[in-house]
Image 1 (cartoon, rainbow, N blue to C red):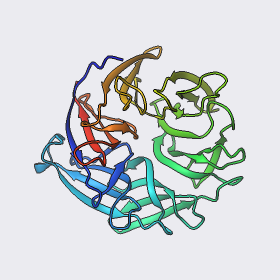
Image 2 (image 1 turned 90 degrees about the horizontal axis):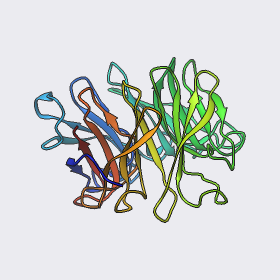
Image 3 (image 1 turned 180 degrees about the horizontal axis):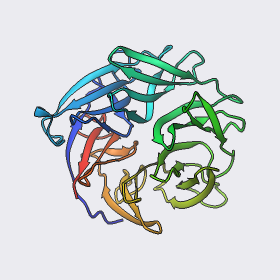
Image 4 (image 1 turned 135 degrees about the horizontal axis):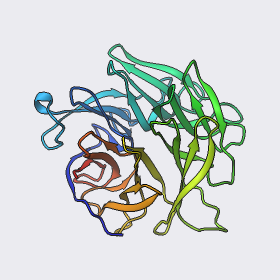
Length: 313
């Protein structure tokens, strides 16, 4: 694959301030960037962090000030946060913890100036799901997915609008099963990814599919090939309806890449990671109004604990 964009500016994690970032970044109106790491912090259960630009100007990652916003404990608040986070107009943060909680199956949380509040605790299988992978803002409210649990044990699609409600149970032993990413377009359609691919059909890779609003019918759009292993992919959309993705185990160096799907799902690689600039991206990309793309990798960088990166058009 040939990359057409160059990566520049990265913020490396050292472990005590977080390790292995794996979330789509969220930008507040003052330019502050928020994200989570799956591990690190004082207890090792992950952190919620923020990056503040000097003078709150248009984000430029070089010289940003990194601060620990919250350290997860792994108990009732959850642990090892995963997936996308959502920032509302009041800068309240919504997200998920992959584990912990009262049942050990993860939580949905809200973080405000007053601290963290658990909105939902997952109960596993065959209940409402287990091991959530973030929340997104979609038509009518917040949506999210769980990696496991639900009636089929292969994860759930849920909404928080009006209270927690499961709206789809993913099928087991099928391309849609055990989802890892979700994003909404302006029409309310959802795009998701899974790294389950039947071995009889294709030994390695990942699946990207569309769930059409409002019935959530599923159509496969793309299967990504991996370099010696399953490929996990995370997706975003822009105002023009293009789909952006990050994927691990693919690219020229096998360390992951950033890609774009334009009209009729034409694939273009934007950057191949090589290690020093990060390795194995594991969170959705963020696209701002100027077309800059931001994201994280779970490893690589100066200290080996991952980076925050930017690609400029």
